[in-house]
Image 1 (cartoon, rainbow, N blue to C red):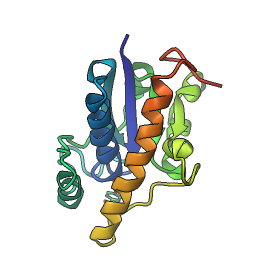
Image 2: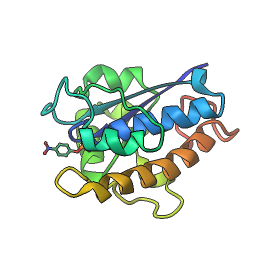
Image 3: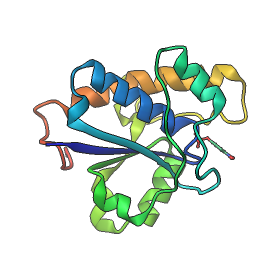
Length: 164
Ligand code: 4NP
């Protein structure tokens, strides 16, 4: 059975493409590529059709990860089609919960709930900062995705439902 995961940030050109690429890479590395469908989207439509920001792609390429996403905006269908929707920060979490019918709220979580170092924090928006911000995003996204992958493949839940 396939688990469908959507990562969501504001523009869908920095943080959520990084999470999409890193999570997919880790799943494939663990021989679990076939278990997941992974995508990303933005709460805004500002960058629709664009590839990930060149600085984000460069930082990921340094770690052997190719980011292939094209920006799109979250749609109502996403709430039905994905098993899990992970917001990259609290603002986007709030926007998703406002947009989604309440039946779907259990699927929508803060990504860094799973960060072993700073659980519950935002993934900082690197867009207006220097190159070090993109490296920091990758560090956060990598350790959090490791925990998330372990969680989603553990016995603690069956693949599509709320773990609570
Ligand atoms: P993202 O970063 O939400 O991680 O994709 C941003 C990208 C673009 C903008 C802001 C944040 N923007 O203001 O255009």
